[in-house]
Length: 154
Image 1 (cartoon, one colour):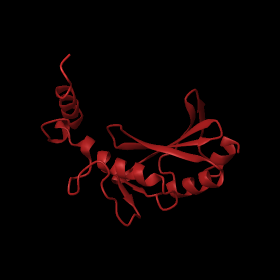
Image 2: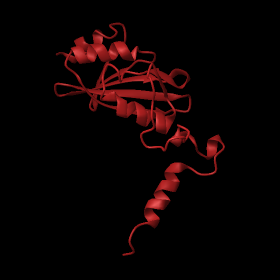
Image 3: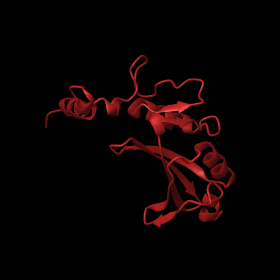
């Protein structure tokens, strides 16, 4: 299916950019459930969800492949929430759980969102628990230090 036609099926009024790294639809507020239905009906394959803190909030990018094209649909987690698509697309379960653990996104409409990388009882938002929000250590730096300290001496 033609990528432009497919994206028009989600929202014909919004712009689409063809870049070297794929087709981009930067659409804050897009209905992610409608997006998922249209993409699946058009034969697209879900590949991942990427979260990017931008100082104002969290950009969330849904990555799809359509034939030989990478299609990236970017939205924002308004108030830290997005509707879940895991009931429409079970493959999204893993990505939603990971985004919850790392960035504390609340995927609404799910019966439960068990941790994927955190332990039961750990607070979600591992990557938001850094010095700038009142915590002593950046988890990414701690993980890097622990990994390096476990290496065998050369």
